[in-house]
Image (cartoon, rainbow, N blue to C red):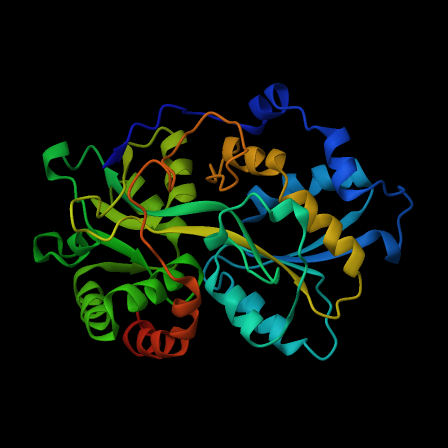
Length: 355
């Protein structure tokens, strides 16, 4: 299934002209905060979402509340894993108040390790149960789909791939791409496949992918390679695909495995968590409440990253398919997180020397 991608050149300028933040509502949710800066008016966030996408949201939070956001970002190649390791290393004396992960599996690993504080915020109550913790230790929002980006100059529509299995087709050897699956959403996707397919089938799949596909450093690099015509198609996230599309590259999006009996397309949410025993717990809660408002999901949806809202109350012009509009994979994220050690050990053995 392909996406028509009707909204080329969507920008934050359009968003800010057409989408005024409902300041009164947000104040009611997060409370008023004075604008005096200092240690008690700062919140520390570790975020794996690209700075270009997350910083405007932090700026809006600061504009409304006066609370400064001190953000630590990660690199494309170590997304979420590097920050997860930092949080584990700092657990005796946490520095981070809020973890904004661009995926879910490593957030669940931190939860299993006891590093996350329960925060049953009313701001999360309208989100689907599968995208939030029952005890409030993590909250999913603003998803991305795992899709195939296709170069339309190189492939006519009848030749477009329609399944993840096309990554293993020898006819495409060396002409398809995948990010090294050791971090970020590609690693999360792998863990979900270990859960859905079982260990044996998942291992066979990734071994075949390693032999057939070009392995690049990140999802952004996969999208760039397809957009530039270096690859015919590749596996990436919707946000990276949309960036290439809005640059005017000859690309389209295919949502894989939509046929009868197929597993569907995986949607991976961003996830938020309050770090246990962090220095600024109350300010961290205010930031989480803000990030879970419909206005923020709408802002992320209409911005360059084209995130996919999960709160059904978000009113916006869809740019991409959602779990409500296509066949979504029935992913058990908790089970996938439980399988992470097995998944990661195998992937390191197969892909560690790739590139």
